[in-house]
Length: 107
Length: 113
Image 1 (cartoon, each protein chain N blue to C red):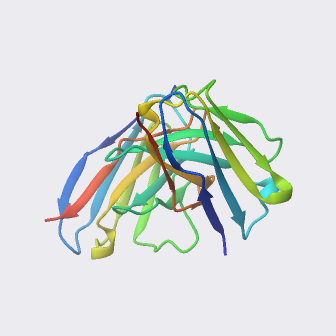
Image 2 (cartoon, helix red, strand yellow; image 1 turned 180 degrees about the horizontal axis):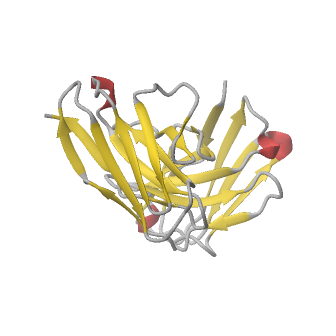
């Protein structure tokens, strides 16, 4: 099975900050990587698929990059509604696997 | 508008069974890959199972293989998850998802004696 890791596990940031979250796969997954946002008590929301393609309706402050084993989610200017937990998921091979999540909270 | 509505969650004793349902609308269900993802209390997301849109192939996480069965009724636009031999560690909110895109609101399954 492909293992996914994320760093950092949590971070504190201020409104307006640029935030970067890393995701690493234990073996190459090409660009079969998605990013999700989850707020407390809510269902996850899909942000990015194919490593860098934005889902419809997702603001352009979110961007994704990477290929192979190393990936990055960037939020260009953090807003109050962006404080949440972010997960990456590989869908290159079954079983699909999620990273452990990165919690972004207010500094 | 895409909508996914889960139902069927509840309280069950260890060793028991439960069937979750997810009613879909707003997209072509028959050609869409659909998945179940769960989240134990205070924990991260865990992928559970998928049924592919094209041929209806099914795949499972090792933790549920042999106990859970994913299926769909295309005529009813409904996805199912039959859960047997339930364990305490299966306690979670179960989400239905149109693969990589849309998520339901989740249904809570509690396994406890």
